[in-house]
Structure formats: C-alpha cells, structure tokens
Amino acid sequence: MSRLRRDPDAGNAMLEFVYLSVLLMVPLVYVLTTTFQVQRAAFGVTEAARQAGRAYATAESDPQGRARAEAAARLALRDQGVELAEPLQLVPSDGVAPGSVVRVRVTHRVALPLVGGLFRGVVPPNIPVRADHVAVVDRFKS
Image 1 (spheres, rainbow, N blue to C red):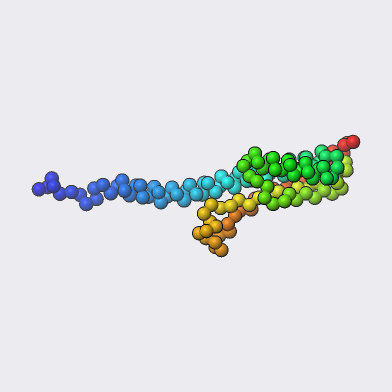
Image 2 (image 1 turned 90 degrees about the vertical axis):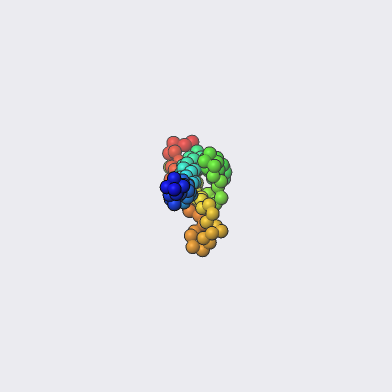
C-alpha cells in the first residue's frame, strides 16, 4: 500500500521554478532593455553635440554652419539608431568669426516601453537625455 501513496509535493518543484523564473525575469528584462535604450541615446546625443559643434566651427558662414551642424547631428544620432526629434539648439557668440565660441545642445527623449498605456499620469512616459558641447572656431581660420 505504501507504494501507491504519492507525496503531495511531488512534481511541484518544476512548476514553482518556472513560475518564479518568469516572475523575476520579466522585470529584469524590462529594466535592462530600458537601460540599454537610455545608454544608446546618451551615446548618440553626446556624439551629436560634439559633431554639430565641430561642423559649425569649420563652416564658412552662419547659414552653412547651421546646415552642417544639423546634418552632422542627424548622422551621429543615426549611428546609434536614434532620430533627432527636438530641434538642435545652437548658440554662436559671434558667428563663425575666428576665436568665437558656439554652444550646442542636443536633447532626445527615450520613450519607456509599456508605460504610456499602463501608468499614464503616474510615471513620466519618457526619460530626457541631453548633451551640451562648446566648440571654439579656430583663431587662425582664414
């Protein structure tokens, strides 16, 4: 008769393992995915600000510098899989005159996955990532 009796906990270990694994892995994957998206955006905006400043500082005129800065920022962001959603903020001190300074700010908002519909009004739906760069126009520029 003892052979026919089964342990009531037999077979539950696998079920508990799967349940706990899913319960712990889903939030971990979400946090890692979000962290990687923010890091990608941080790399992109940092490089975009730097390249936009350099492109403006090497231009021959203000309109040409602004166009080159915009194109350089878009290209640097595209390398990281990010689009330039907000306008590039470019503030030159004295145009492209030798020795002048240009300040560049690039901002991107990283959308949080699944937050828009689930936690609207409780959690902000995006994380702003911003980079600033100051470029100096060469003093000996002709």
